Amino acid sequence: MMKKILMFVIFTSVLVSCNCAKNKKGDAVSNLEGSWILTYITEPRITFDGLYPNKKPSIHFDLKENGVSGNNSCNSYSGKMVLDGNKIDLTAPMISTKMMCMDGQGESVYMGTLQKVTSYEITDGGKTLNFISDGITTMKFTKK
Image (cartoon, rainbow, N blue to C red; front, side):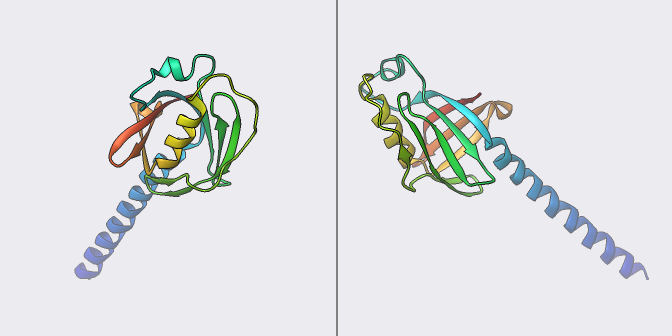
């Protein structure tokens, strides 16, 4: 009888711990949902404000549809994403409007950097989204 009780306690503990781990992972992914505004991008030759003097790029995640959309400082874009834990794949072809942009290189720098992102992390209590490529933070966003 004592062995059965002990087995039951161990089994229940394992189930509870597994559910806690899933919930934490789910919370991290669910924090991605919504809209974010770009605050930093790696570009060695041009300052952030020089790249985006009029409008900062934004990104919006729709987890139900595995979709991503936003504005790259001039044109709107949308496409699909693949999430696996903190790994993110944004290399699927994006569709974009084709307005003429007078802001220089900002749009192409943003879209090119976005294509290189391989993972993400959310910090500052859910307020900051960091996109990472080859272990280096290449983009930072603030929750809208």
